[in-house]
Image 1 (spheres, rainbow, N blue to C red):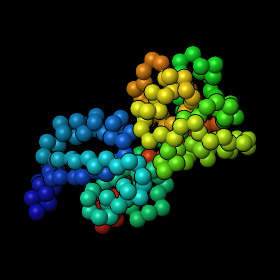
Image 2 (cartoon, one colour):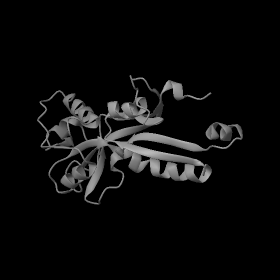
Image 3 (tube, helix red, strand yellow):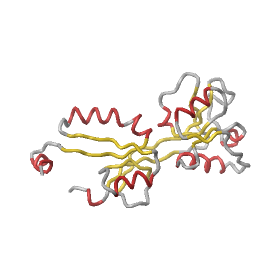
Image 4 (cartoon, helix red, strand yellow):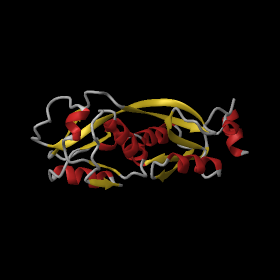
Length: 200
């Protein structure tokens, strides 16, 4: 009731819970939340960080644990999702790697030891599908990893290369470089709500 009355007066107050995945939570939302806090001091925003699994993010919406969720678009579930940004995939490799310094192709990546996200991770499945489209035998990844920090630590030690969303790897040590993919790949990121939460 207080929130509705505040809206009538033209102010924004209340609490909004936002379900999100780790790269959005660490790279985009801190600046957005700081700006929101300055513009709308009566608005409290709470983050619920999920592991990036889309059904888990939607479950948080459906069960009422969150009013808003960041999801990959297009999204086939119950939520209404608006595209927010495009996040290109890149190759990660150690500084000084022979393939660094230019766009790299799928076939070239397949000749390298691969460090990919775990098979349960949507980004890992997207990267594997992308590499298989090279039309060459796909050898299993040397390492299947869950955490971003583990991926760049292994790459930094020269143990292989990876294909990852750029957003997840904004702050890299000098020992690791991002290299564009010759055959582009991207994920569409969106913000979603349930239809009954839409206010006119």
